[in-house]
Length: 317
Image 1 (cartoon, one colour):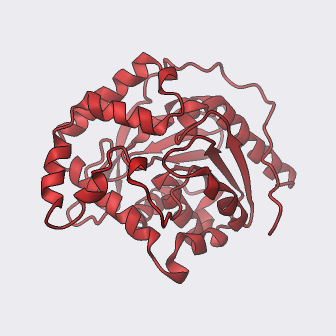
Image 2 (cartoon, one colour):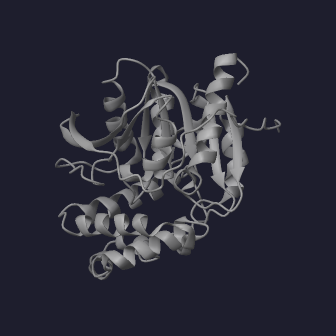
């Protein structure tokens, strides 16, 4: 078994961390027949594209995009069915279909991008980088949703979500889930995704509540979440060459793997295997951090990302 080379941290000065930063403004882009909502962070340098996880949105990258804005221009996408991106008729919400949407968006830049993905967005980004290496300059994976053949229901924001995609009992479960208030959904998310929810600023909690209120008014949001959950679980059962474990070695881009030591959703035990399977992968495990390191530790994540970019420029990655 190969020895993992630790990921370096940059010592370059970062902008002061301003957790009061409002979500970056967004606009709609026509991508593969979708009107996809993208939040843009003005910045210098090549493009960086951020892909959120299951149940997330473009706002999950607000603070990290601010930390990196002196080095890249940021573009945080709402995947179809999430945030403000309404899915087209017939969209199947599989990982490969989500990856197709990301590929179509990356093609609009005319140059390779620095690609970021968290959780489900990490799995989507792996597929994107493996199938279209010409579009990806570097890859950063934050707790990517690699296959888990021993999934635990207590690792979901609501254990009933796994039942919501089943026949017969699914409709009743979905009706029960729909009764959750925006406050209850936000509380579930905080307790599951953050190592210490008490450290989340009040205004960020209010932002999440408002976002959940907006989702409650969207006729397509619940179906998108349920079917993406099913698509993610289904991907874990794909055999042989179609497994995500077989896809990781196909990624050619320099890749930084970041994992929270206290991740309740995707076990940190999967971190070393994930990094080792990547031909140019390095790993950084963050203490006192959960599933969304880019939200909990944006400055540290930014230093790790900049450390990768500096090493790539030196030819030492």
